[in-house]
Image (cartoon, rainbow, N blue to C red; front, side, top):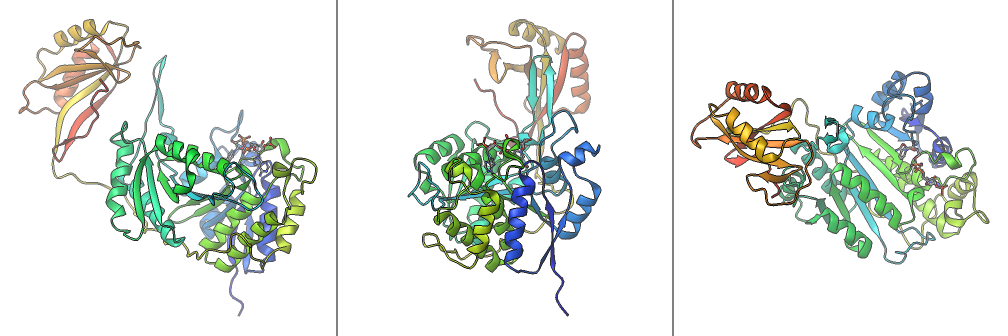
Length: 480
Ligand code: NAP
């Protein structure tokens, strides 16, 4: 009996998507591996049919069956639909890790040619500011929640090291802004440092994200794998694409416990859609990553090598050549198919293994503290009062509370008790209350009573409990 063919969900997508996806499918078919494609709709067409997520039910069912997706770019709707189909896919299937490799490609001339760049950004893909939890706190002050979890950090750190091992890589950098955001970005740094010890064969190093960006522009060859939070990774990975030739060459994999989605980093490029001009390299290299992940390692190497040989031979699309001698998408695809089985002179295949994914954590993940204590309360108040007057008012309103006003900040800067700094104020004050007696305790009843007293005179937007876990403060101090 012939073994069943491996099924893959294919989303041709929008703009240049159908052209570059078709190119990759023709090349995969030419490798003659046993594979079957389930082509499904997602993106603009679905939005226009009134599917608010941009992802029809049949597409979700296909992905649930196949667990692997080769995806063209999806337009983010403007004027119809209400969210990005890309974000819906990532969230729906919890593809928590975004892997974006870039390397020097033969014949693709850049400012860094000859420096043998081969860098992978491993980006957390679900959390951070990109969860999109935002509020207008006052008509003039916007707030976004930067949510970083221990679970999210563990998963992305383990993925980064698993990927490094699978590709025989030597070094993993963790890039964060933990010097400023000690709790959120710091959580990734601490998790990284804790888990790095389990991978003694790989050098591990923390680097501040701004220095990382600088070093990537100055001496990018020092980097191998970089693991980072969602927004940092979004920016850094576009930067690294730029180092090696641009968006037309940058593949990516969105890795989840159950589903993985492979796609080019670029978007739908509507200006060149339907013109047979698009560079399919990024999507073809994404397809090679997909083949490797499903265990078709030889086919993956063949496809990747055929792309390198094609580029070496001088066949290039318009984004590299200008209009004159440019190959069309179809010509480039035919050239790659013609080069299947050949090996690059400058960049022979590496010894890849499939990435061993860390096991899924199911249910509600809890990090337990041995002890916890409520140490105070931050109350956010909207007012146009001078901070000294606001403080005097709050002190009068809370004389009977076990909590006393400790400080007031405006956009993080201390404005009470010290008020010597020239701070430009907005109508959004963080008023911190702490226990009058350090050894006393308080609970929700005292908080509600305090809020009742404050709300008699002031408009408050939200509160944050100041907690201590295992004796350590679980909140930031003011940026004096
Ligand atoms: P883009 O589609 O990546 O295109 C920007 C420019 O880059 C294009 O105009 C084109 O430049 C060039 N380009 C990109 N890919 C190329 C390729 N394969 N071959 C040749 N040239 C290529 O970015 P955008 O214009 O900001 O976004 C367009 C739409 O795509 C938006 O709706 C956006 O939301 C969506 N998008 C989707 C994804 C995704 O699905 N993952 C990712 C990013 C953006 P020239 O002017 O030189 O032709």
